[in-house]
Image (cartoon, rainbow, N blue to C red; front, side):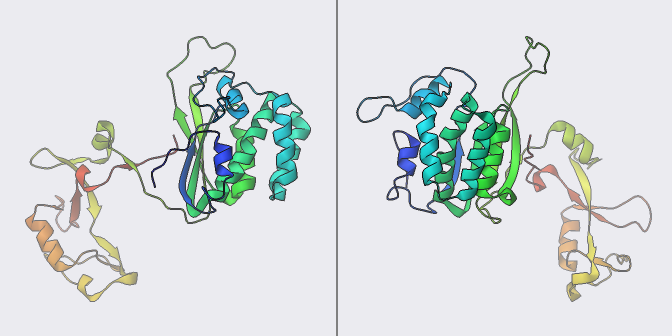
Length: 285
């Protein structure tokens, strides 16, 4: 289904017909960060009025006077007792502050997003350092602390010159949570940099292509009969066997993929080129 929903996301998420439980694979949200920035109004309600949530989101200034009703409705109606207790704990020390107003806006939306996600689903919440610690505690209660996956650091700008008595703020945070311990995951990779290739692909073949040497032996623990043989007069050390069959070893040698050490009697190794590998797995920075 490809569909764009127009309006306050909480109203749509609360519609059980449009968004039944466990119906969504992936959520990415980039809510306002309570950073006092000004943004453009993106939508209006069918009546033509700007929704209260959107008005405060896109002036990014949060007032408890406007959030109090939302907070109390959430406390009275949220079925998750642990989340209610967390919000009450926040209120006990944040008082009626702009940050508390911001959390009062976020909590009901995060609860609904958890409801609509499939057991294999994941959520990515984009925020900044001023609120990430509160949001992480809130998400720990909603999704479960064991389903926290990563706090991803995204450098969003270059260095600031006008920094006074503190370090420059150049990053945002992305909190990654899954619904269960078995989320759907498609591993992503970054291309190898030239420096990485020069460092780790430390051999050069006759055509000038860089490669590294990979072990061609494996543990005997799960060896099959096709891995137990002598090849080119060489046998693996005790407790080791060949990782590939004799036919595959012959094919690799014919393709020029075997690295032979200069030392007599040395173990042959497999030439691994950059294009043989998918790249560097993305990290959390």
